[in-house]
Length: 72
Image (cartoon, rainbow, N blue to C red; front, side, top):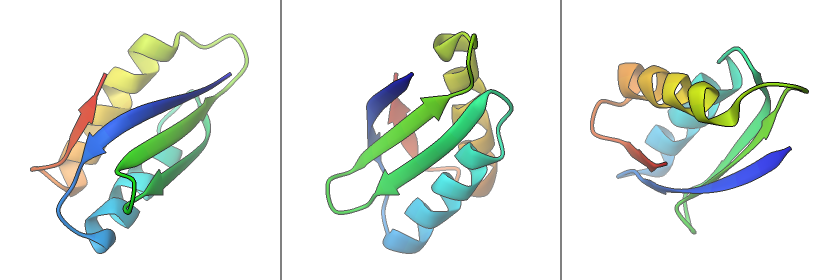
């Protein structure tokens, strides 16, 4: 399953850090961040609960870029 989330991030480099952090989160098959549209597209592993996975994605993104936001 794929879902798109609106994000808030200050720069393209920070968006890349968020993308990398999201990809490393358990339950995420793939993640793409588009800085120009301020959107994150997340593809989840089969059978994963996307809400709990996204809470972990947000925590991991905050570790690398503390002023970023993902609107869940």
